[in-house]
Length: 128
Image 1 (spheres, rainbow, N blue to C red):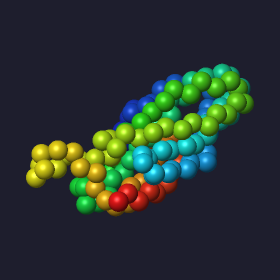
Image 2: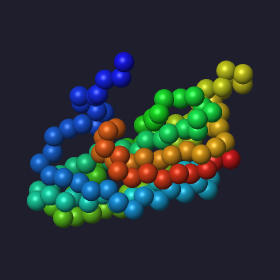
Image 3: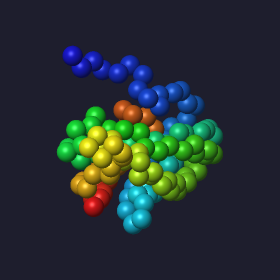
Image 4: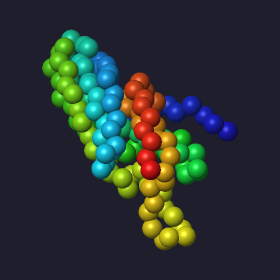
């Protein structure tokens, strides 16, 4: 039975509010996520921006996994652009046949936000 989560991962109290925008995901030698966090409230604050990945369905993994996070300190009305590298191991699954980690080819979905239940940004990336 699936029950709603009372306090999602990343849940916390803040005296201000944040907005996420402009997600861009690139995958040259590594996967990078770039996005903007804005403090839309009247007070300074610190947001823990979180990046999750949904693996290809062939991975048979849970719907999303935490693959990166960073602390963003913002004054009232301030915004910052953040770029994070995503470690390929965090996108991998353990392959029992090879007895090691494997990065599956396919479509990955990158999700960004302030908690596991609040992920307003979404982008797809294809890995080979």
